[in-house]
Image 1 (cartoon, rainbow, N blue to C red):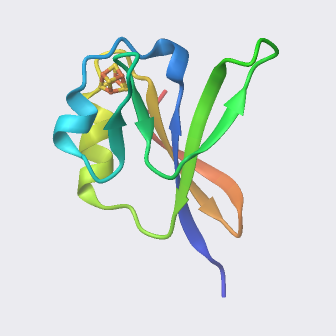
Image 2 (image 1 turned 90 degrees about the vertical axis):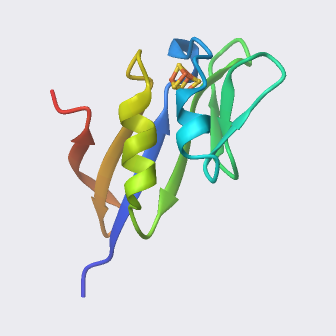
Length: 96
Ligand code: SF4
């Protein structure tokens, strides 16, 4: 049977620290000392300068709060993907 999962991808350099996501979905988003946010328990991807380029977390379920948090971001820094057996099959948000 296929395993369906969801990936929350945060493009951290785009974040302007509006904190809408953490207000709506504090289970996933925590404020950081630099005024931006971080995914709680998320994996970090670094650029060549050692700065965080992306953060992501893979979840087995997509709660409404995850989608609401992504949709609250004014700069579209949060993307949500559907995975089947570990492979991205669909971009759920934002739709292009
Ligand atoms: S809503 Fe967007 S811009 Fe605001 S803190 Fe969250 S990710 Fe950053």
